[in-house]
Image (cartoon, rainbow, N blue to C red; front, side):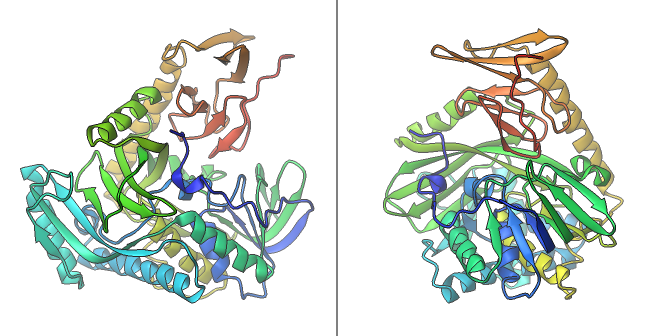
Length: 488
């Protein structure tokens, strides 16, 4: 069993470029997941000077840890949006998802991308009688919007169901195979993609942005932040507008079947199959807020037990985090139009469709074109009913911070300890005869870090930054390492 994503097992090492010079651009995209690559792909024929920078490798962030569903059947999202706003807004979100699916599938077919695209049935189900009326309401809404929806009370495979609905026009694919081809197309069209090139600081100067890596400087007129968590955005109080959910995913060898499943309520259970060189079942479970359930060894253990109960042995296990917005609609567009700053984030666990939608919206906006979904996803939208969600997110942030401080001295594992030196907390991890020390403070907002025994990483329980055992930052929003220096 490997503690890594199934999608990352066959990383394509071809055509990898690391930034080796200063750049002067019209548009810079930060982030090499589905949002960044979709945006760059849509701009491939533009005469603008454009480049994309990724701190690690293409698709290695949230896109590479997803379940890879291309789906508009998204739990009970349409009634959630209708309850928050009205039917028209819910219908517009539905249309955006259908258009995103059309974009992905047409791109795959037009570019002849071999990424295991397959049309599948998708189910929402429940084993709780009290959830049945909600699913029936979702069915009514979907049918009113134009979807063909079927219902069943039969169990599907190993899932025990009281009631379920299904649609027959959704898809699954291999997200990394898809992104790698998009990258090659962009490169062929003269749009540079730089990997292992981390932006650590951004400044605004003379109506432009100056972005700094550790060695080079990039000047750009327009800046798109397409990273999972929108770092550098303290003036826009993103921690109050979003919360972070984590989930655990296992992939086991199994005979592939032609459907996906997801529960109607939290905690989420999600199932799909993948036909690759081998056939796998992909199983997601144990979703919770990032600040809860801090013992990762126990969390992975519960995932493995659920798979074992199904008589399955996981070949790969991994963790993913998702950014949830208050109103279930993503934040895509201008944060500051005067200063030409744009973001795409907050996909509410549906990153394949919403990341592709972001690519459509962001590419239109930077070329000064109208996009019919820009107002729907406006990051600066305000609704008076958001106050409850903001208060919940404040509580979650405070809870995560307090639990991180309390947890830093909690001995979850025998080979992890903490010490204080010159008033600074140091995390110590012992592996065989080696000792690894790190500063036990996340550079993002100061939360203390919890050691993840399964992945051998230091994880932030506030905003999901991750660092390897030596202290190197491997996932943002932090852009800085926590490597301990003995001469302090």
